[in-house]
Every structure is written in structure tokens, then in C-alpha cells.
Image (cartoon, rainbow, N blue to C red; front, side, top):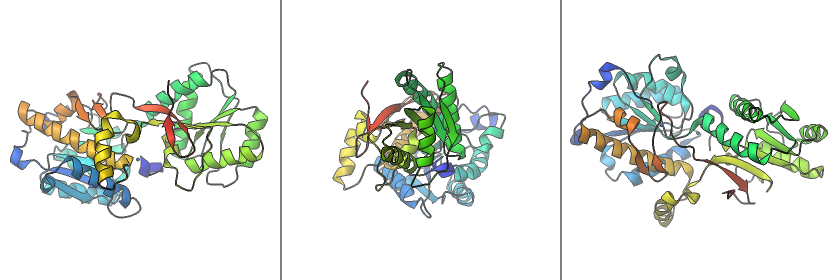
Length: 361
């Protein structure tokens, strides 16, 4: 899984008159672009995305695949390919750098984007006075924070808790958002701090938590830090409940988390009823059903439905994306006026010794 800006691992109505006069493409002209990192550190994720997309869209001849290499240069090159091939819509983009570089070019050519993995708005989007035709399959930090605040506000109402972060932009923003959400519920932490990430031993941090009287801590950081904090607490014979956001879902196989570790994140394909047929099909093919594989499948499901409805109603594809509901492996997906999913799929999970499992209400 990705972290940091790379992790940052779908649009609002586009008001430009030039976009709305663009006629929908004919059926024999429809091509779908897929931008994915097929080289570099994140190539495995890119390959999973493409594999899922091909499973959803058997007519692979109409899929135009471009390597965005998770970089600005790669994003621009991918956009050039999509424009040359006259694609109707672009999916993919797991990395914000690539999407940021591709957006101006795609916008100029009235090509809507359905991002499979970039959660937050890019600088290009933020700087534009009008909204761009970008839709996101991921939910973004705002909804993750809302779900965390709701879950912890209920569970930690009577607890002495702390909120800490790893000093990265993502970690700080997540922790700050959670802290604000809890304070809105009149819940005050006994301790806040920024810790040094990547240490095998976090005894100094844990000692400060214990002196502050914290029995629970929210960690705005990665799974390896949560594991180190848990291990140090156990070494000091200090019971400590740890919680975090979807960053905890990036745990490598050799990272051992405590069973007192909670996570708020979207449900995995294993726990989605809508994904069971897809899971069984892919398992039958010898595949491990990862989140990115499922995102590739869902992205093409939405793309195909959007293109078909746009042809039927003789309207731009972006207009359909902005107003319709789409049945996918991830369930029914709608997009709000900010181009984000209108639902909030984030749920409370607990680590069971092997993986994170949903906590039943």
C-alpha cells in the first residue's frame, strides 16, 4: 500500500459551456483510458489495478493503458496518450503527482477523470474558480475523520485519551481533524504530541503517555509505529488501547499489531456482500483480492455504465457521473457535488491477530 503523497492511496458538475456542447462519443469510438504506475516502486499496485479493470471490461481492445509511473512526468505523458487516442473517459491515477500533471491537459480536451485512488483535491483543482470534471472512488480524509470522530466519541467518552501524530502532512492533518471532531463533542485529550516515526522502540513516547494518564491513544501514523508503540507499552506492562485511521491498513506481513488496536477504514472486499461473486471469481483464478484490484474492477464498472447512459440520453459523460447511481462491486456508488462518494464506507475494525475485522455494532 502507498503512504504519504503517493498514497494520496471520484466530480462535481462542470459548468464550462465549452464542455457541455461536446457531443457524446459514438459506441464504436468509445475508448477508456487507464492511468496506472506500471514502473517504479508502485508497479505492483498498478498491475493489480489493470488486472481488475480487465476483469470488468472484457473488450480490452477499447482500454488504453498508460504508465503514469506515479510521477508528474508520467502523468503528463499518460494524458498525451489519452488525448491522442481520443478516449471518452480516464480512470486510474493512484498517485496525486500524476493526476496533478495530467489534469490541465485532460481538462482542455474535455475528458472527465474517475480517479481510483487519489483521495484529496489536487492543487490544480483548488486553484480553479470552477470545479473540474474529476470524480473519486476513494472517500477522502474528511469522511474518514468524521467516521473516526463518531466511533471514538462514543467509545472513549469516559476514557483518558491522547492524540499523537508522526509529523508528516497526512499524519498531522488526520490527527488534527480527529482532535477537532472529539473537541466538538466536549472531549479533551490528556496528552497531544508529535512523535518521531520509524523507531523500533517507542518507550520514551509511551512513558510520556503513561505519565499523562492516557489509557487510549489515537495514532496519526503508520502501522509500524502503532506496532512499536504497542510493543513498548507491553514491555512496560502498561495497558494501552491504540486506534488509527486507514494508514494502519498498510501493515507489512512482518509487522505484528496488538489485538488492542482499532482502525477506522473502508470495509475490505472480504467483508462486502456486493464483492463476494467477484472475490470467488478472482480466487478461482489464483488471485489475491486486494483493495486495488477491486478498485480497478469498480472503476471500469462505473465507466462502462456512465458511457452507456451518456449515449442513451445524449448528454456528456460528466453529467451522468454527477447525477446517476452506479451498481458496483463496492455497492451502490453516487458522487456528491464535490466529486466525492456521497456515502461513507468507513467502519470501525479491530485487529484479531491476523487482520482487521469489522466490529459489530
